[in-house]
Length: 90
Image (cartoon, rainbow, N blue to C red; front, side, top):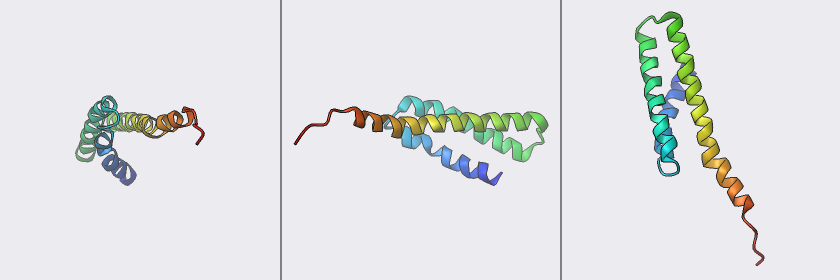
């Protein structure tokens, strides 16, 4: 649970980092972060049983997928764009 909470705090700031580079991905990430906070708070206050575990896992999985898409768009795409540029001779 501690690891999830730490990940939740880090992922809550992800849309702020994405806003300049890819607004569409940042806007898609905001509802997932809100859902994760709602599931986390309800998981801590209510006994949701199996439904709570499934919602908890699905919201975490959705956030991990979006986080990996973010890493791909922020680091991998620019790297390959830089590598594909023709090198000029100086």
